[in-house]
Image 1 (spheres, rainbow, N blue to C red):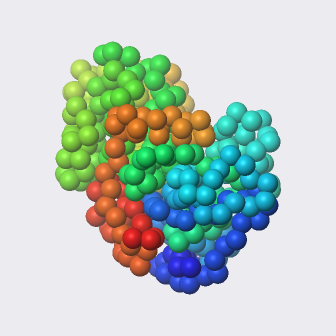
Image 2 (image 1 turned 90 degrees about the vertical axis):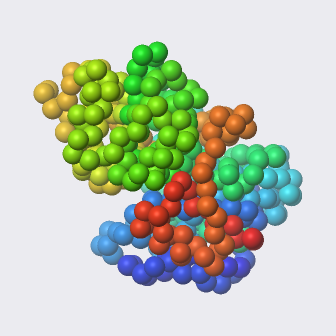
Length: 346
């Protein structure tokens, strides 16, 4: 089968031919219908050789959708042809966090060498994907896999962050979304669907701000040196009760800290390498700062349920598997408006 692999440190990903996978006991083989392109993959391909955490070559793609092609021995509850998406942050299945459905916070994954597909385990940027356990599959009966596959990360990750902030997002509150690309434009929709907050979106790109307005942002602000003042002005000087930074770079985390209200919450979701000092006087009183990772299996089911009602819709552009390297080039250059999706079988 064809697969998109990261094969050498510092080199661009390549479309290659690899052996077809076969499901062993307890495993499920999917015929991939859609695979999402993510900034996390670019971060992986930017790491230096020293300390690189995965074995190469690595088939990319941690957002996957497909139809069940074959079942390994002992698998029940699924049938060939079922349409599903893959819950990405695999865990041990037995620790305290996994028992809560929070495999994204598995306590033993590192110890046991368990990696998500595309982030250590062969991923979905291929014609077929081997899933190690049926519990990682969520049905999407009737939903378009191209529109749905980004929900497994670009939907689930902001959903998890927004859900934990909901007690603060009462009528009259404000939520700020920094970075309105793949995850951020979904966060705007989630905030509109799940809260009464006024949503202010920040980005360096006028095109992405236009997308934010289209999907429901009440206000948009160019993320420049005047952004903090504008947000403070829009909030009557009080700041935002919840701030979601989907960039996570040093300038954006500083902006997040500067626009937060007293008793506000800041979620640094992006992996841009920035950090925010926390201490007396560094931030407004009782501001909490968190760095969430993905979301739970139950939350993925909830996100898909929202999409089924039409409350959330991911803006996508599609590429063939042969065009997948181009998709990563465009994403790295900031030219993808929304989410890029690879369709391996056309």
